[in-house]
Amino acid sequence: MSDDSSGLLLAGVGGQGVILAGMIVADALVRAGHDVKQSEVHGMAQRGGSVFSHIRWGSSVDSPLVPLGSAEVLAAFEWAEALRWVEYVREGGAVVADLRTIVPPGSCTDRRSWSIRYPDIDPDLLGRRTLKTRIVDASSTAAELGNIRAANSVILGSVAAFLDIEHVHWEAAIERLVPAGTEAVNLTSFRAGCEVVEASIPPRPADPDGFPGPHEIDIRHEWCKGCDICSRVCPEYCLEVGIDGELALVDAEACTGCRLCELLCPDFAIAVSPPTENVSRGELVASAGDPP
Ligand code: SF4
Ligand code: SF4
Image 1 (cartoon, rainbow, N blue to C red):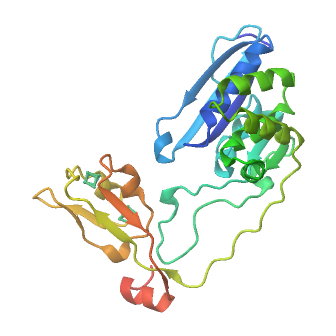
Image 2 (tube, rainbow, N blue to C red; image 1 turned 45 degrees about the vertical axis):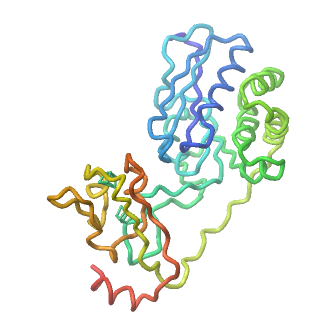
Image 3 (cartoon, rainbow, N blue to C red; image 1 turned 180 degrees about the vertical axis):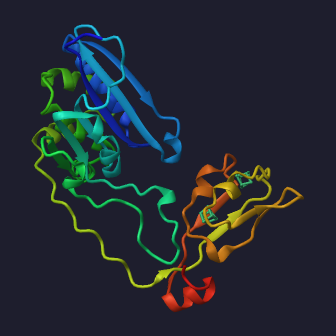
């Protein structure tokens, strides 16, 4: 690894365009004359899992992995991912974080409460005071420009403010790598990201009245092979595979609607639909027993 190498980390959730954004950064750095190495993890991308891309550049780079506490910039496409990866940023480095929140399916495990286990959008949670932070609302900016899927180009525009790469290289990389037909909106979004002002942080939404009623669980028995994955991941023990290999819903009332069963079934054999209406606390407690 060369002494002058620098690192950047992009992190988000599957489907947000993190990998494409990483390719654009790497391409722009190559165009700017750097040796560049890139590595990414995207195994659970199709199921809403965490996706990240490490990029290192310099005169000669041996490893693509960005060591803890050394990144020049963290580009987080989702708020919880900003918190998850912030420790990789060096003192004095920069964090570009999107306001977007994607609540993981497993964060709802208490059916007696609407509260979700998701952190507040609060820059203080990023911890260290020496970081340069820029919180953006990339999705809204891209939507206003005509295509919400260009949000990653808005984020790259914000990242560009912290990297010494000429805009001509960024724009050439974007034009080469984005899907055909979306070059114009991605370039416009990138330029908007360069100008972007700090997004105002929305207040945490108030808890709604009442509690969610039971969710609908639809088991497609003709597709189910009884592998037991869904019943093992269900935090509320709602599902069971019998000795005949048939999957059964054994406790519908306990279902929180977390969708882990649906997301992890390899055969798309189970589907979760939201409740049609809320129930009062009294009704819920009556059906579920006393709270712990
Ligand atoms: S049945 Fe599925 S949606 Fe309901 S709690 Fe269990 S894993 Fe979550
Ligand atoms: S994970 Fe899918 S295939 Fe396996 S038991 Fe559950 S519904 Fe059936």
